[in-house]
Image (cartoon, rainbow, N blue to C red; front, top):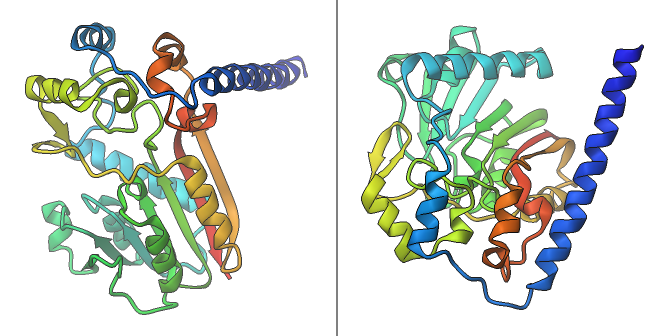
Length: 299
């Protein structure tokens, strides 16, 4: 009982702390809401860059990809129990390992993506179909035929999330599910997806284009397991944009989960370089919401 009470008290304390942080940050941001933001000079940006080790938590070796897919499959199995699920579509599947795991477990598995990034053994699998997304976010799948649509770490890269979610709803049968997990969101600490180029958080607000380019020249752009010419496309949608999108579709879906995951470890950067965050119409929730989990049931 004592342990339970301590856990309950700790949760209450954390909520109080977050509430105080929210009030403080929002007050400071409001001071500069009508001012133009400033940017760090290269010297100051380099000093901050040196404070952080390179983030390398998202790996692309085959063992890491298989482990990631297995974890996601287990989580989906626990949440949905997968009873009554036969047809599964993964949007933005990347290496395709999760769709491959579904196929190995007897599901009819489909992959939809803008490019074919599947691993070679996934490409060779005969029981997984692949459709390329066209520029109008059309998926090339018949309506009302999918039991479960899933997507991981891709929705923040979609040019038109409204069209994309409408297309997911179109292909999902009534009573079927759509499950999205994605991030980092653009306004969050690592939202530029540039952490291997510039190691410190919030480069999208701290650095202007010339200074960021100096770090690109020095460190390159490494993402999706390879060096690239450009950063991945980010749609720059805010947390509130996703809230409005889901709310606007409530006549077509039942919202089972809309869960932000917050990250407050880097708030000191906002306090230290506050003027860089002025003039962007930001808030505490926008700056600390690292990722979103959205689960919908089609009506």
